[in-house]
Length: 68
Image (tube, rainbow, N blue to C red; front, side, top):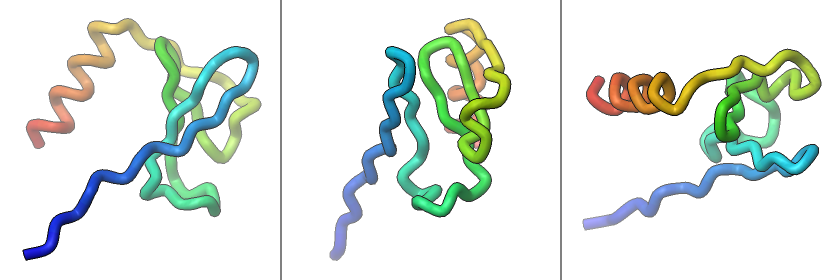
């Protein structure tokens, strides 16, 4: 039996915020988003707009994708 350990997210620190991106996205950009408390952004365009979200909205989103 083999076990797979979870991969750690890729961390980027900019302007006092730590952004997290899935390690599965690789280093070539990919179709990914990065998250920091209260915001989501496109990893291919980190200087672009940030999408704000509340803690409740984020929790509901995570619950919906983990139950899928």
